[in-house]
Image (tube, rainbow over all chains, first blue to last red; front, side, top):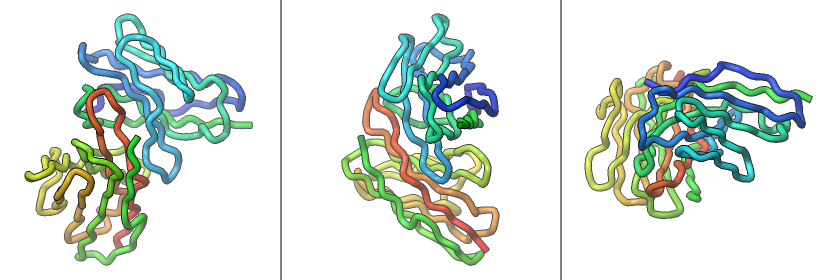
Length: 110
Length: 114
């Protein structure tokens, strides 16, 4: 079973920040938080991952709470091409066996 | 990053037949995985393809239905055997390179069984 809980859908206006929440209250000490997205008819695309510190890359920022029981993926300036299903996954590194939950369907509108 | 090529990208097959899906990676990888995505659903892990040994299957998936080969560190195949319409799904190959790196996915094989 997936170890994460996400809202089923969210809307965002183009150009605004999209903040996607994820609860992972049973995360263990050696598990990372990974975010992937799946644009329609494509394979999942890696976005970002982190252990306990906040992370930022060219695609997004990841904010992990101090107790590590939840996190937020931030797309700072959403575009129409960011419309996708976003998956939050907790997993050990070095194993890469990913258990996907139902994800959040993000719709970015003009 | 790893570049993954899956073949075929899509196919329409008759029930009772079998289809073999190929996954080729542009570099040697330790871990390879096969997932299924049923229409409108999330991804479900079928098995881990182990190089030089039998694949490790997840609950609900068996070798007779989904035989997997992994002859080397860059290639794997998944066969969907004795197909029925319920097997209509997208099948995806995934690779994990090494510790502390992300997993990469192929573009998937869209299978329709009629």
